[in-house]
Length: 183
Image 1 (tube, rainbow, N blue to C red):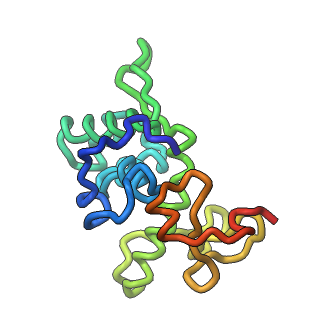
Image 2 (spheres, rainbow, N blue to C red):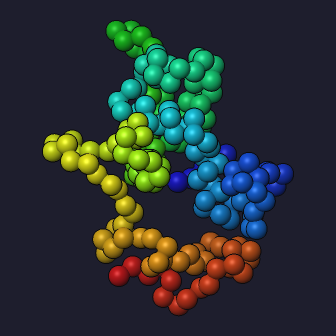
Image 3 (tube, rainbow, N blue to C red):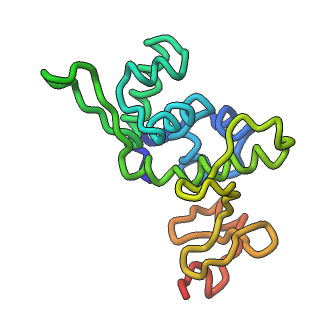
């Protein structure tokens, strides 16, 4: 995902990832992603869009925030390319929002975060669970590699420096000859 507003050299990354970063923010995909997404309130707006609530008034009702706060959150999501904004039509007043492709691609991330959070709650403490739409069967999403279908977790994967890595990133992560090659 490309962030439309690049980091400036004065950027303080401490609010993004919980502390000073060892590499330049523009060199770190995690910092870029968190800069675009922000905090929980952004995921709440995305969640509303995933649930089909596309009108400003609908989201306002479900999120229970002020019009100003929701407008700011939506403006930020539009600015970074996660959401598209459509002005109201004559026959349907009000502004409508839709997930842009980059925003739709965040759905698995949201699902994985919910699943991770539910892991640490007793079944009766869970306020929301994911189920199969057709069968109602409880689902527990995991991250898998698109090419192999293998589960991606801490035991079987590592980061390596990518082709655009700066010196800090190259110093931190190895560059095996086979790194990044698709099977």
